[in-house]
Length: 467
Ligand code: GLU
Image (cartoon, rainbow, N blue to C red; front, side, top):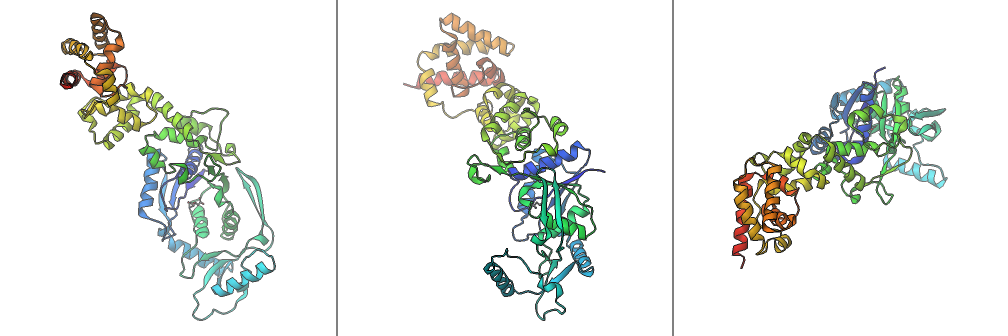
């Protein structure tokens, strides 16, 4: 049997953390077993679905690298198929028209509540002989009365629901449009899904979906309902807890592999291993190891992982993402040092790509002002002497590499009888505008000789003109 999984988002917003985790689990399971991962857009709710949201979801999947083998399929393109199967169920007596008015249904519910019964449709139209003139009917699925539905959920274990607890679900509205639970079932059937991995907010739908699948003569998929994600306060993760959109993490300077690594560990574990490359995830992941209880979202851990990936990923790869962030700061990275070199110099001290980009602007663009505190401390009258000496010796330096730059700075300090910091800090403020940067010899090596000298000149001028 070929494993076939799917991710089936409703396009009513962005790709959020919970959805991305479900997608990742489904993708990993398919990849692990050499199976097929299907993307299905559940856009039947015409009022809430938007093209913008579809794009946001596709963009999120692409950014995370969760490539799908089939799809995206759109439910709105499949209405003829749903209608044909609704007709088939009607013809076979497995579904029926219901003409009950809203008033009738309200009265039914009130009477049941008065009797302290659970409100449910009592099936009165199952036996109605003639249509009611002028009333467009809905179609209800005739749920079995007897027996029970058994779900051997791969995460939650056995769940048993008696059919007497389920009522006859509406599968087509009075305008003929199919309802959510029906379209999911038809799609899972037609797309030959073998494993339905989804959030456990859908667990109550599953017995109904199973009964409809059986009525359509389908083989049942296996189900795995993944527990939800909570914020630190124990409430379901929502906007209140900060970023929940995957693309917000891109904008905030996270690498996709850090987000994936974070998501895979959110509700799944493999011993006490924390760091997983994509290949290791595929190798180690298994559905039965998904936690049985809800998981708590921890932004600090995600940040820690991001720093780990900034430090240990191929700088060429990190630079690809850094370029994007530099672009957001209106910097053209071709007009300055190779971002790969910038990554190598900056990554130790930056936890996000946003931090890295902001701390690297000075490599590409002249800064407007010196950081006030840094200038007060390091660009005083006495700094000018060292800077002049450096300007002269650095201007003549060949080759312009870290080691030779280091030697010049050390020799300058020695000849002026200063400590290394007494020369290096003014130099740092002169070239970067601030008192924080990568090691100063490295900073100058990346900035280049011409720009470095020009900025030293500028600082000397600034000190001279200050009073
Ligand atoms: N469209 C549903 C959702 O976004 C998922 C349905 C399913 O996975 O069966 O919550």
